[in-house]
Length: 436
Image (cartoon, rainbow, N blue to C red; front, side):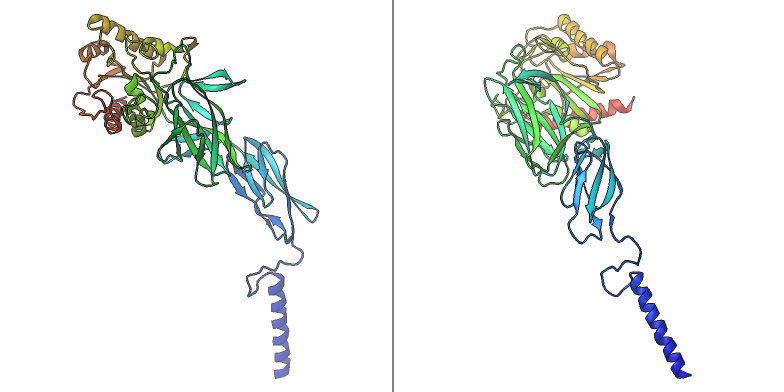
């Protein structure tokens, strides 16, 4: 009887061992697949991606070389090890071939959104880069490229698969080389000459880049000569890299002003790009505090009556240069900071001309709140108050006498003074927008 029980125990143990082996449950880390099942398969058979992002596919169970391919390389490409890089909106099939058998993953590339650390909400759009500001297409160097003569005009894109990006600038300047500034993933802005367009994003992961034309010399002829900067191309340095356009979805704030608005002498006393910086102006700090997209319309020496380096404000609203009309754009807030350069005209004539500017802006942006800012040196304060008094439903006067700003030359705020002015203005704008 004992022998029969022993034999039965041995047979049960052997049967259990066989079951453990065929069901893949063993004491080791290696998986043993059940008999009759397909032991090779793709890690994913359907994925959704955004342009300029990556995804790693694996052919599980493959013990030798796998051949990867994409049915539409304009939409996404795949590397030798199954790394998929999305390039543009669309659909493609990623195929893995192993021992003459095909395994397919359907890839959908569609537009998505992303919020950077500075509060900018980006949405994927078509193209290589998107723009905000006073850009227009201009024939240069045998091609037609997006061009701007205005400090603060911005471009936006994202990159994956490359630690560096080459921005190929073209310039139409005769006095000095302009500067640009850029941030990665909402980080601090870095400045450099447009003659050195290579920028670092840190690593090969997906990064969002915000780029501004930061400074064009005060002495350039922008009105008739259209002095400024064009972007010929934006490309990743590595072959595996991809650059695609993104555009901020935040509310927009437009600044109509003079050299103070564009950041002249914010860094030092020089009137060249080395001393000027749009990202060190009150306009920049105000927009950053509000998490709004700034639209710069600032030109040195200009005013309500004075033309300065460009033209008086009324004409600047209508035109982007002497021979071009200004393009349409949407704005939620309009800031007017003019008067500092208007040292020859006062009284009713000034009030009337200021009202013409306000009415033109209101006709173009009927839903926007307009902020009439008293110049920091308090010139024309009474005239500006009088001009805005009839439009209280959509225009507010911003008093600045108590701001106690710091300056480089007694007129232009330095970076610290500009930051204080920007924060004070942002506080005023926030309070008015809450009343809507």
